[in-house]
Length: 257
Length: 156
Image (cartoon, rainbow over all chains, first blue to last red; front, top):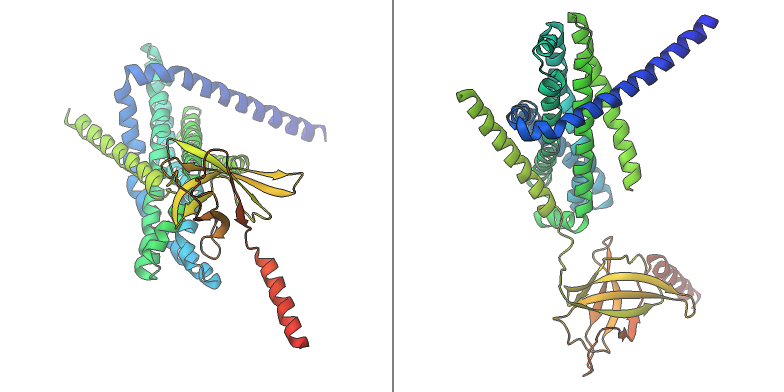
């Protein structure tokens, strides 16, 4: 019985310790951010390319199909109330405020987060990070910060591309396939959607970008330097990012309403 | 060198596409704010019932948006809703006996104030009040009246 209590207590303390270390790690990244942006911007650009530009294909294809599904589902549900024309509003709110940022963040975790975590984990396992320290190069600054910043910069753009392509997908299904009036589709959307709604989506994608890149970089950096440890770090990246994104999404939405 | 160049071009294209998407979202999907004027004047109107009229609802004349609702309050003395709205100063020749009614765009659309021109030679100006107003049509009341009418017809 005492052993059970001690185990629970220990894991509780361990959780708080990890959480605190995570915050300090975040602070450390932020401290190196300005210098990195000014002096070695080329490294950041390379990471924006790796995490952002290379994720474009999966983001665009997913966006198109998510938008198309919204068109089909929205049409069949709204048609019961004779409100098919509102499908533009329905899809725009869904994509801009929720689906765009959230699905982009989840795809980002799977496409870019895993590659960040395993890359950094492997660097650690093969002692590349230690080698940098031997050469008086700070691995946090040289390796982690550009990857973190690359993700943070790429995410809002990816989410915006997702929402835009998604709207075209809805347009394709609703207007071309189900012959909803094209004028009603766009005009009702423009009448109802406010700039604040778009801003909410951008804000969400920024928060998710910070969360997803931070978790990926953290997991990679703290991976156990073995083949199994790197694999586990990659898995944990996806799992924790998914949970964090969905929890943050709920909290931000609750605050914004 | 070739490699970095390709990366830079790719990143540039990606960021441009992202900005294009953001631009598209902010300009093409929104657009409710079709009223913007540098100089405006404020007019007041009192309604018995404003329905679900909200701040920033459009004020339209002949279907064209010429102003926007800025403030909705309740007068505790006369027990009426007081709606303040601004009108673009270039429309300064609206007769002061025009009447204001609360209309709905579409069946389930949002509500707005529609102005119907009167015949007076005196125009609305800053601080003046619209004399004739017509309240929002509340669907429940309408159905209620309809039912009462239908009932009384049966009695005949």
